[in-house]
Image (cartoon, rainbow, N blue to C red):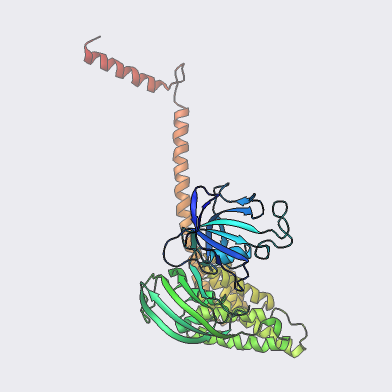
Length: 458
């Protein structure tokens, strides 16, 4: 209901509607007046990144304290995360795109007793006219490339979130091009979602969920099922996906700092065995995740007796060796080389470590260095047929590289020799007084004489 006309700091007279109290306790701490209605449809949600223009004034005397209009740049903030005063988080959450609203915020919902000197005194009531331009969901991708976008529909409870290895119980509803391809309740260890047709991006998002949270998650193909898609559940290649997800419950996995050293050794053994099981199934990325946990658990061996230290050392060495082999299978040769090198730091007589580093180096085109590693294998094990075969492969690669270099540089040297000979020939030709080679001058005059005879002018 319009009750009066109000002159806006943004210019012009606008109708002032009924005032709304936005506070939970209806204490009058944040009053809202809609000065211009926005578009129909949904508004921003908690966690969205919103863009606004605003003008702020003191309620006491109307003096301006701040304005984005002066700079011409819209102000952005994440809604509901405490990046702005409480009054803004409450007020902007109720707005529509294109809406202009007037928020009157008492000090408890603004800057409180401290104020914001020099312009905002203690216990000041502030008035803001805010125009909402746009918003987008929270980007959860590590590179902030827009590949994992979350919009919170229902906020979760507490502050705990699932960690890697936590057992999560979720309800998922997945759509591709508007068609439902996944609708179920599923329970799985976080980090092993691919075993349950849960894409990587959705797992990353779940790491930020609180118990009871319900959100929409939009995934680009990179964080979904990629260029291959997932034909088993009806996802085509290169598809963008949208999920509605509810985290019903979860049991956190114990963190390493919650365990004593002996417990860490036992947990590392479990991870090593799980990694080996994944490796045998050719699920190399899942194997890598488990083997990495082995390294995390066994960084230190303080407090262990000698027998346990030996066991810890053996499991850690296996972790490095198995990571090297897994990365070879994934064609990640630099990481394979580095983990094999770590194994050699622990055991300088380890045949497997030399062999796996040699394979990585050979794949990287470092045949000479690879040959040295395969020779080290043979020095330690003369009957190692695999190392002997790789020595032959290295010799063939080195020979081929030398032939290639010879052909490349030989052609260059021939070219340089021809250019040098041509230069020396020109330099030794007889020259006239003006330094023009005499034969060139002679050819010039012969040409002139021929032209004049043709023209009949001699």
